[in-house]
Length: 290
Image (cartoon, rainbow, N blue to C red; front, side):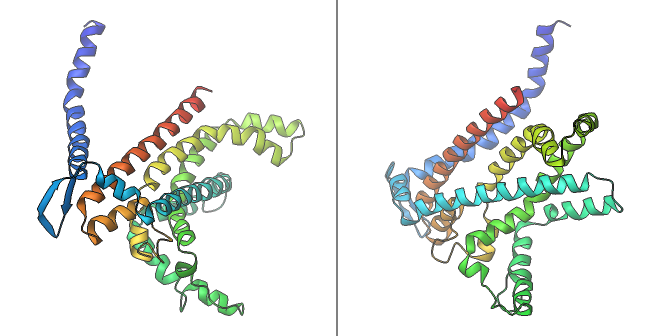
């Protein structure tokens, strides 16, 4: 079979899955764009009519829009910094041969298998409860007043919850990259007199750069849609202190019953997410080509 025939056969076999994938993505997006051009209130569906781009201007002009963008960026950047830094440290730690290494690795990755609403409930009721949570009991033991994390630092608290969930993912990716590194480089640098810090900075960290880039890319795509943790813990408050772009869309759709404005917000969120993904893909491509 010629090369051209094999390519045609490969395209023919792949075409059903590609068509299904396109329909899976394009149809919901087209429906969302359609509703974003309508005046569509869920309580008054009979008053539906075209208002074109007014939903977009209303959504952008919302007092919570700018703060939701800022909160989303703070959440994403905060989680990335925590997961990458701690992921490197934990990967370096469990890469060494220690007693019970398998059990340690299972414990490290276990938070990743907990559903986000369950994890949020655990943090809200067991750890951050200002009355009888573990953090409150620890503060009382030290003679300090308990701190209401979700009331006075809601966005930081949610960032901590989400980082706890995504830390195992970053650790596994970085640990895999770490185990692929040749030990001869470390041994040669050690024989040349390089200390542990220099070995990490000039050998280990450059070797982990590709894995770090992949972690940042994948996590950013998912972190832009964080929702369950906010709904379960703070409900976007106090005020708009923990309202992200995704949660603002939810409030417009299911609390304000304004499906048109929520659809416009969804389109804006998709555009912003694609812009971020394109920049990250360019960064990944440059990193992999380096």
